[in-house]
Structure formats: C-alpha cells, structure tokens
Amino acid sequence: MKNRVFHRRAFLKCTAGAALGATSLPYVITSSALGKSGSVAPSSRVTVGCIGLGNQGSSLMRGFLGKPDVQIVAVCDVHSTKRQGAREVIERHYAQSRSSGDYRGCSPYNDFRDMVCRSDIDAVTVAPPDHWHVPISLAAVRAGKDIYLEKPIGVSLGQAWALREALGRYGTVFQFGTQQRSDARFRQACQLVRNGRLGRLHTINVWSPSSNSGGSTTPTPVPPELDYEMWLGPAPSAPYTKDRCSNVNPYFASASKIWPFIRDYCIGWIAGWGVHPLDIALWGADKELRGIVEVEGKGVFPTAGACDTATNWNVALNYPESGVKIDFRGTGGSSGPAPAEWRRRYAKAGGHGTVFEGTEGWIHVRREHIDAHPKSLLQSQVSSDEIQLYDSNDHIRNFLDCVKTRARTISDIDAAVRVDTVCHLSDIATRLELRLTWDPKRERFANNRTANRLLVRAMRSPWHL
Image (cartoon, rainbow, N blue to C red; front, side, top):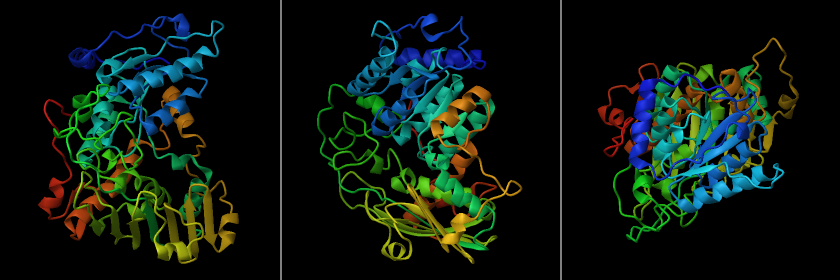
C-alpha cells in the first residue's frame, strides 16, 4: 500500500514522543521481503501493526493474520509475555510459506509511539484497555495510519469527538469493532425495519451482559513482565493489585480479570458489550433515532471491591419526535440470560439481543439467531428500488478493502460516535438517576451542568489528546 502524506509536523511530534519511551531499535525488514520498491508497497499488500494483545486484541490479530494480502510487521503490548507470544505466532505463520522455514520479520514494542512512527506500516489495530483507545488512535492518525479500533471509542464523549475531528482532518480510513454489521442476519433485520415491514415502529428492546463486581484492592508487587506505569498511562495513578490488570492484559472478564469494570479504565459493559445490540438498534431505526432524546435510568453499583461500574441497569431512551422508545437493560451478570419477560416473549433470547417492535409485528436478532412474528416477515424480499444497507460479510475484509480504495467502511466514525453517545447517555443517566434531555445537534444536555461535566474526562499528566 502507498502511504498517504505523512506531514512533517506530525513526523517531528511522533519521533520526539517515540524517543521518550524507546526500548529497542525496530527490526528492519528488507523491501524485497515485503515485495516493496522503495517506500511504495504493492497495491495488494497492507502492512499492519497490532496494538493491545489481550484476548480481544489477539483474536483480532489472528483475523488479520489469516488474510493473504496482509503483512503484520509489528506488535505492541506493555506485557512482555504477550507481545513476545504474539510475535512468535506471527513469525511461525509466515515461516510456513518460506522455503527456509524461518521468518524474523515482526518487531515487538512496549511503547505504541515507537510503532506508529514506522513509515512502512499502513494500518494498526487498536485493542488495549478502553482508557488507551483514543490516545493511541490519535497518535496513529497523526502518523498517517488507518485504524481498526475495538469498541467502545473511549472513556468519555469528549474523547470520541476528538477522534472524529482528527479522522476527518487527516482523511483516515476507520473501522469500528461493531462486527455485527458484517453479519447477514443483522443486515436482513435492519433492512426489513428500514423498509417498513413492521408498520409503525414504536419500541426497541435491547439487552446485553452486565459488569462484574468485586476485585482485590490490596496492593501487591508489580510483575516484572508488566510495564505498569505505561499500562496506567492517562488513567489516575493507583497501586497495582492482582485484579486491576493481569499479565495477559485481558479484554473479557473473569474472577481475576476485572479492569473492564473499573471506571478509571472504562465505563463497564453498558458500553463494552451494550455497544453491539445498541448499534443494531441504531442501524435499523436510523431516522427515527436522530432527534432529541429523553433519557432516564437506574443502575446497581458495587459497594465494595475494585469494580465500580453498573452490575445491572434499566435505561429508557425516548425519542419524542418519532415516538420510538429504546428499553435498554443489563442481564444482571457478565453471562446472564435476557430479562425474564423477554425470554418468555422471544424465542432463544440469550445474553444479548435487539428486538424491533412495530404495529405489524416484531423482529428479534442476535448472533446466530433471527426470529420474527409473524414468521412470514422473514420471507419478505427487499427489492432493488427500496433501501439497501451497506453489504459486508467480513468486517476485517471490509476494512482492508477500504484501506485500498479510501472508501467509507461499514462501521465508520459517524456510526461509532452515534452508538457511543447512546452508551454514555445511558451510563450518565444511571449514575445521576435524573431525567435528562439530550440535544444531538449541540451534543449537550439541556439545562444540566452536572450531566454536561460528565461528557469529558481529565487525563493524567503528561498525557493529553
């Protein structure tokens, strides 16, 4: 791939920042090894660096590794065991296609700034803990990289807005990790809703797994393989505890991996998981959900331990201009079932899902399942002169194709900010337990300074956006 213009000012900032945390010189891959001629890569090749190598980041890395037109040339994680393990996986993969059976072309990094400054990288995956999403993405954007970002965007709407502005300024190709849009079931459901098959839409029921509670608050020594200060980064300073982060930098939760439920690093699964079914709600009911929003909610929050994000929630988002209401609930646990009343009403209502209800019936969609009442709704064909949604059957492939063509991805920044907004409105409503009115044009709450103050979050010095 041919890199876009790398502005001199961005280059100077990048190299200066990288010098602060450089631990080693990058492994230099010859141009012939990547099929390059000078600084220009073949049109079919996208060189990628992977930042954040926990469960989610490693899964994403393997997804890119399986694409024949991708060359992963660098990995980055503040856990040495994770980055070295990822490097070994990548080099074993590429070694299989070499006559020598050997390959040494993937460089490991502790500091993302060292990686994004490399001019031979076209795109990066960004999958560290949430508080790092936007700072890392902004550095990559300013260094001329395209970005595949795991959800949610960040820990505040202010961060989402900053990223949106930067992406527009630099012309970056951006894909958000709401991969359900690249699943035919979700596209079918949303197209049927968009084209009026449910009659007048009035309710959207949405549910997702909730956050965990607990977590040790007892300080313990930092493991030698972890750069804990870099792990904290822009988050508030805090003593290391065995549950705060682990030597595998996890994304998904278990009893000993709870950073996704500590507010310093995230806002919990009201965004981390809720973003998926909410994104489908917004994709299916596009114009009905673009006006003023009245939001209120209640949440259950831990009273002890390190976790402090909602372990359950019940949020109502009313759109008075269209008369549509979103009922957004947590399941009461990280792997709990749907609320009981919805399990009785909708077949196979598991731990997450989206249901569109209208005057002519309903459609329930979740991963690996779609259902409707009446069932004949699913036999309805959408003609070529009706609304046709963006068609993708592979989220990573869609991103790579757009890197090459500079086209808009299926989960672009506008869609990402829109769904992140609903997640943050829901979180703020549960914390304040007030009825709030949101103006999407001004991106502000009406007449509530307390709520508006929660739209931004300070960062620990010297980090800034």
